[in-house]
Image (cartoon, rainbow, N blue to C red; front, side, top):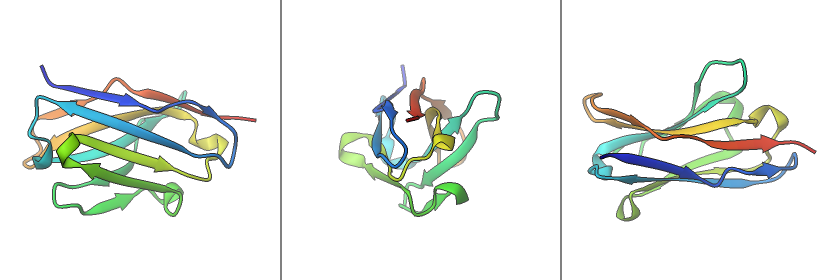
Length: 117
């Protein structure tokens, strides 16, 4: 079946960096919009960054200038480079794949990012 597998989450100090990866299997990756979401304890899941199948990119305001989303279609992988991390970036980060017409949609299982001194 389709799988999205995230990795790269860790405990990091404020100001540090992490790179998250999400590897997709059993989908035509290049035709999907890929998105990173995050969910902090007690909060709703929110979109952090998105990259479309034609490489249009958008970011949530609080991460602009600090996070960079990219994709490698040859590796079926989407990345999220996170720099200048803040405690408020602490959350479980999820990868989402959406086909061109909005269906189907797939989610990964999430990876924990904790920013703390």
